[in-house]
Length: 384
Ligand SMILES: [Zn+2]
Image (cartoon, rainbow, N blue to C red):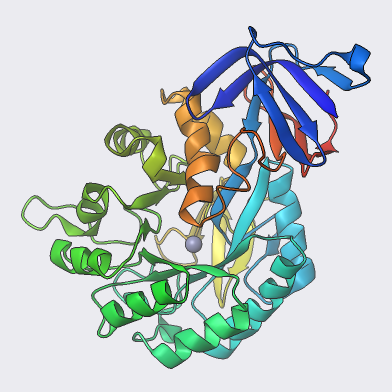
């Protein structure tokens, strides 16, 4: 058993100064504060003094396409593992891999490859971002391969994913979308509303059919107007909906990020990267699905357009940005770990520092830089 002590423990309920935890057989065995008696090294335990550093749960990224120059979307396992390795060094201990709009046979092949990676524990599941999306709001998704909602195409992708498809993004205003949302939910996946030109009322219909997640709120959706409040207003208004946000200062102004936290509280916000291959890599030209993306100063734009084509964000830099913009660290941690784990049904295993959960942990220094990473109770980056 290991004891980690003298930490600033970040729990969903708040920060515990001088806190400690024990880790045994890959799990968090006990959690205590400064007043609680903790096991001592004289009992034969390993002891690590964190010297007042932050201790947080590992990040859970529900929406990522690549990183480190590698892609998760092209049906290549080695590329996918490279992208996951980059994000792991930035504190992401659990990822859903996001496929893009492509010819349906390519999505099916991508899902088969990702299902193998899920079987082996490299990813926690698959997010299908397309192809049932709006032509008007498709962003960097290739419009040539968008489809009207089609049960047979959905079933082909779900079958290829072998139970690992956890999220499907869909535009609820498309013909047949409401039935397809019900089909997604019946299959045990989360229906997410996104890349949509739906009105407020059409979005509400999608939510009544069972959709429970907003794909990158505000991005890739009709804007807010005081006479046509649009999807964002409907998604914010429904307390059962979790909203993804890309808090990189490019996709959203920091004031909007604060507004979302103020309105929703941490239990309804899932911070995501939506990262493409250039995350953690140099500026340049990168493929994103079948299209090319120009990355300059870390901003990814579809070549020849002003459409934002994913981000170059990592979860640790998102944490620093949002904490420094004034959101309490325990709320940011909940949005990076606890809430995303819960929305895809993983909260009994991961997503917070609590007894019995998997010991996926991050040690951050006073500047909120990642100092050490533990996955399944093993240090993948040794502490200082
Ligand atoms: Zn995306």
